Image (cartoon, rainbow, N blue to C red):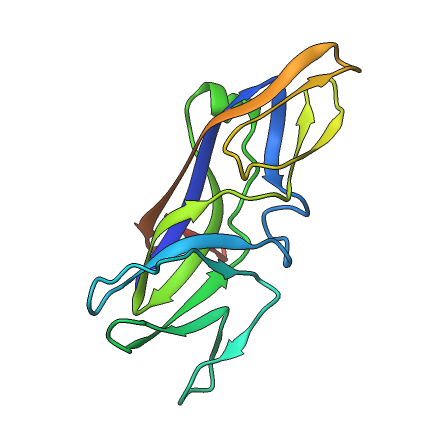
Length: 176
């Protein structure tokens, strides 16, 4: 069962701490992603939405997952479990260094996540400290911070999934 880390980066102008509205572990934030069946290679025609607050029972198991779904092409069942606690906001320093921030970890069985769709429900702070609610569904965001008297923006959004491994450091589980 592969474990995937979703990370993201963007060009931030006069903004910092870009993250989902209630933080990276927001139970109501919808992660919209394209999934590929590991059996037949079929890609979901629409993005599938996962939230931390929704759990379903795994068929023929005592376990649970955030998503259990059958491939529409081959009929094989797969599941995705979200693993909170690894996400961090994208800071201005990370943005200037063109570095990515981790967002969420997914344990996938039968599916591989291949695309992430940014949506509404994000927040960030301007360098003057003003809080902004941000809609990233169009890909970019631009406004003017009247308190800080400067333009603010989010552009060049990128998200990627990468296979990571579970490790233990000082009694904590981390994914690298």
